[in-house]
Length: 88
Picture 1 (cartoon, rainbow, N blue to C red):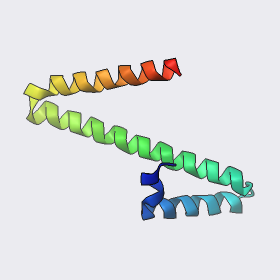
Picture 2: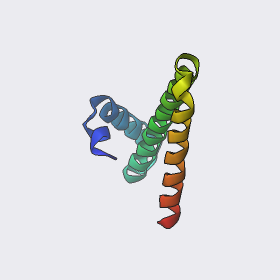
Picture 3: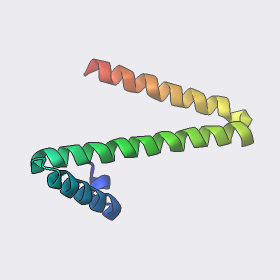
């Protein structure tokens, strides 16, 4: 988990609560931690995707003149990321 995530008290509490819940369900602590971290990470990704979608929607409605440029930036970022992932 990133430094940002581990220094956030809300995330720390959520992580601890999820780990405890998974351990209570009978999962070994080391697996419970991985499972909980994965859930928090996925939730964070979902939040960031929602934020980008909301921002793009707002730009389309309120600032259409820069909406196309913003879409281009988002697409370029995606392409660069995919290229880095493919390169390893």
